[in-house]
Image (tube, rainbow, N blue to C red):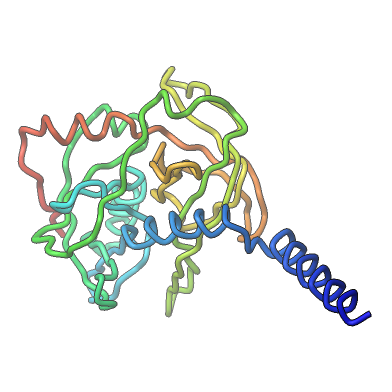
Length: 256
């Protein structure tokens, strides 16, 4: 009798653990995915605009792709923001704010690396001036890694609250599904992902859940509010390592 009681208790424990893993995501796959999310988060910073009055306005997301301080973001995050600030008679200079591996927030001035091929895809490669943090850059996927629609992807970006007196931002991550591999109006390859993205996600990394390699960055789309899903437009970044390896022009500082 006692033996049956012990066996019954053990079966109940196994069922509870199984259901907990099924409905809360506490199983080996999600643990592995959580580690990939953590790696991406550590290489992710927020792009801010320093205004003439000394205030900083968060504008979008960027991520590290080369240990010497080369980052990617969406082209419109910096260039449209820079223009917008000028139209308000508040000349702005873009900076990168990123957390070090010691937990402190560090700020670096953004230096532009002009590349028309990337700009046409709404991608901007920039260098963080005097970058000195010991952070691991994200690995870039090859086109052949993106095999078919339906592949699970992850993404990391900053949500931005546009409060005129006190703008705020916070890091957010989640999952999505590669919904299409197509071309944009310039006949360039572009991915679409069904997932969550909101204001501030532009420039954030989109990566394969299987290996953590980045396939592209968030250009736009998604739900209107955080927590609502939608179609996210993701221009590929497969050619970025080659572009970095062949850089000839030095990066240029943005002037106020």
